Image 1 (cartoon, rainbow over the protein chains, first blue to last red):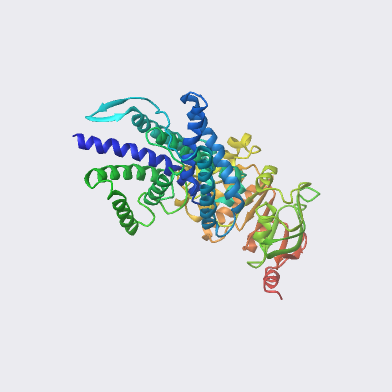
Image 2: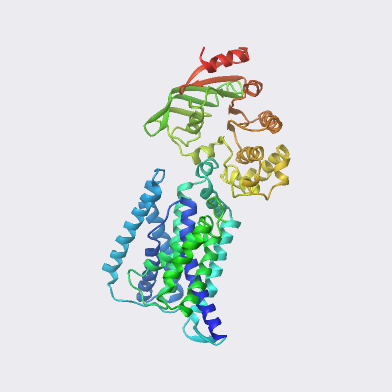
Length: 291
Length: 239
């Protein structure tokens, strides 16, 4: 019983973090049609902004939301500086891979200069531990497991229940037609990046609360988010969300039965096998679009 | 019908990158009612419409809509003036429902107050859409998608409607239905600029025709000037 709940909580927890990261990546892909390789750096930046605000003496309840809002601005700025000028180019996908990688590298080294290489840690969302179904889990982890689906549900209803969300979904599907109904396509691109960066920043805050932070902490989550997004299909946000939890559970199970060492290799094996059968991802539909 | 042209294109040159498609094209529309554009494919009709609606920025020349210079304005700003363009084909928004598309049509602040009234008009014009309100566009037939395209444009509360080949590739029956609907829109008081390959339909709909050839207006046919189908065919083939 304890083994099962161990894997269950581990999977749920990892899945939450992956979902938080992957959704932003998918949002940017579906709306703008580019992959944002500075997404991992957004995660790191969110954690460091939060740390800095806490270091200034702000209480956590103010510092964390403030860091998330600041990240929205950071996402917007990044979009305006290294993505927007390239829109309309035929080779935009590849060019944006390079520009976002470059920006990510700059920001990462900037963070190293500003905050130094020494590992830092954020306060937990909730201090303390508890035991559920025979497994000891921290309240911080429980908080993440509970908060993530709420935020993803909020994002889903924003996209599906509001006029602005409708506009974002429209831009994802047909840019010309979006112009012709009078949408502000540039602003919507900025909004997609801002939302993605906030979500990544929040994931960083979650992570900084249970692991040590360093300026390159975003690299591995970015890789995982890419796997999740490719695995789940990049045509929607619900695909990556399901895939994130699936991969979280897979990792938790694999860690238990095969060990930490083998898990990444196994994960890629499953990914490759999946893509051979379903090249568009398991939950994908054929076209680009948010749903 | 108004005395002054509602839309005038003055010596516009435009294209994509280094390729120039429109060479110094000039035309005035709306003085005599609906305007029809025809001519061989690949000679700039679609580019002309895209330039008018702000999707393509002209390299030189002026576009004036209802006395206002709209040259170089963004597509969004042009939509805000009430000049609405229904693009060719019916790609639209494949994963949105018909209802979503109609809501998007009414996105601009100018159209929003008229949303309910325009929705009523669209439903009256295309009762089929009402039956499939919650269906995704990708699941619709070509004719139905064209109805969604035109319906979306009507939701934008147009003062001038530009249609790019509204009956392209449709079966005869559904084509007739659309032609009737387009005539109804015109009778409802919205002036039209229509690109169309079906000359019969164009002759019935519009009082002024332009033949666009090699990125310029080659011939203008004004009201009162009768024109035979054979003459038009001759114009197409350049005799």
